[in-house]
Length: 131
Image (cartoon, rainbow, N blue to C red; front, top):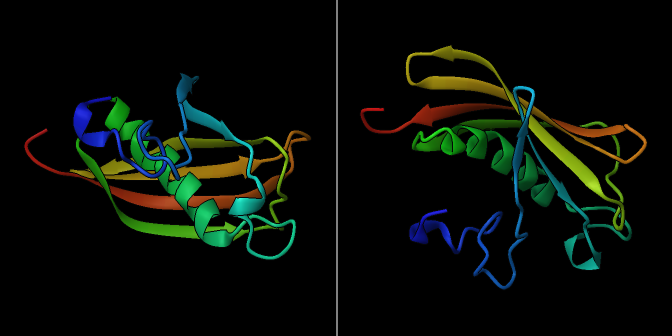
């Protein structure tokens, strides 16, 4: 990670209130895990929807960034399938579903340890510059 991204809310190691996500690539997917605590809840025991959206946005846009592309989210759509509980390890994954010029389409989801999908995301990610 270059010095300019050390304070990213999702993945920056210097951000004291950030999520400090770390990522790995596996079989054309990009993955991270996260265990939400009480500070991440909306309603009691349920993760805040804005932070669920943040997790999906991070894994999808970061996948392209990891490939050396200067990627920014142009559109993000989240479908909340069921409440995401606090205190369980979540697996967040993203994958590329299409590309048109400098616009990539990605999909992602959040799963519980038992494989239950709690949220799904779709994103259009724009590539900036001459990459």
